[in-house]
Figure: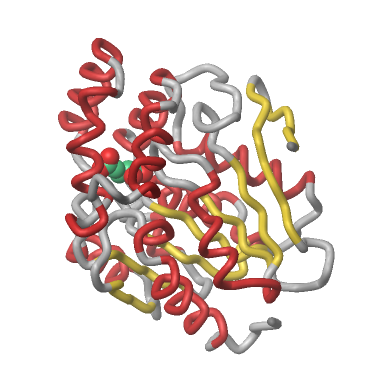
Length: 267
Ligand SMILES: O=C(O)CCC(=O)CC(=O)O
């Protein structure tokens, strides 16, 4: 188990194979998840890459610090972690709010970003009213009453069955996130608008989405791709908001195809 103090939070992180000269992937999680969601993707991609994973502040085993957060706060946590690990360049792969954080990492430190994988995300997600309602409801009543509607956005009906232990595990993962950390990141999403910033993205970028994503639907992710010159867009069939859990094989294959097409690819 590894932790790094960043400001007022101890950030929980894990690395694999980063000192071996391979391209390094830095994963950034979605709202309400911890970094175990990437296990199957790492298995599929295997030893061709090094990996950096971390739990956002307020999530998983990371400290909560002082919510509410901004996307910049989350981006700074990753940048400081990568500097600490002496990772000079990374393929920054962000899922949902993780994709907003990836956009912020590129905007703050473009030199650290080799390529972007912007998954199930957008330049702006939801409306302030929507996020304020969610924050108020969860601060008043906890996450319990929100689990079912969130699961309907995260996963397609065939995945959401009583006999699917992985689905049960994902429900537990969400239920166990600290309420103030979850709401702290909701505020960060509420306040984020990268519509202008994404026009400055100058690294190879893949925008990818599940075809049945209920949180950031395909049309929204396509509108992000339309703002990024030269970006690629891929839809994963039979998949909701969390492709690394629901369709890890197809998802990893799509990203590998993108990464191996890059002229500077080293794996
Ligand atoms: O998943 C995220 O990081 C934010 C998008 C969202 O609202 C997820 C959900 O539907 O709960």
